[in-house]
Image (cartoon, rainbow, N blue to C red; front, side, top):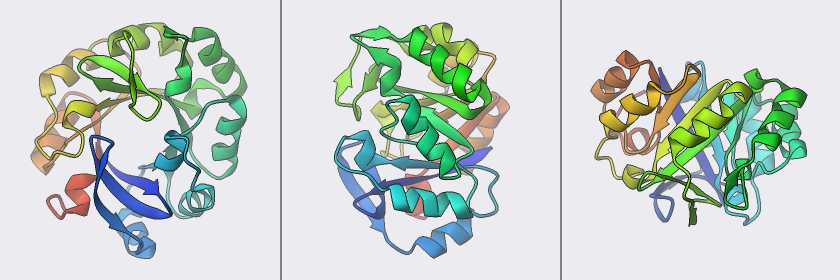
Length: 224
């Protein structure tokens, strides 16, 4: 399944290259809402919140009223999860807060699962050079995506894997990496990071992997 991505920064829809350089930006929200309305799921990320530089909370709530969204960015506590679910998100995406003092915080994951149920939670694995990156991708840990999946599988409904090394570059995502990780979990597996064509989406689908696509859509390379 193709999952369109909406990244918010400074009150605009943006796309960044590897989380750093802004490549495109839009404010014609109704147009994109109309284009994405036929999709069963849209990924909505508040980049300002993720980077600790404010938030786009009002916009997030507005998109959630009009689209079926899984929402992430700056979710650091149980209360943060509650806020996005109350805003209308189908699921909350939790990432950096699952790692504390360089270790996987299994206790926090379990507490989230008890309060909200695993079905409402997606755990993010943002990988740079084969290791999980946190804090808006600014800090690369010693933890691998496989280690996180092994420790956290009981507490979420899906894992969202982002291959930072190819994110925003429109060069494709390495299928061998995705295939290997797909085989390590029974949970739903979602991949992002440079996906550029319908053929690639279909290849991922054949692996049982959903594809998050952003840059290819906004640059017109992949039509939705």
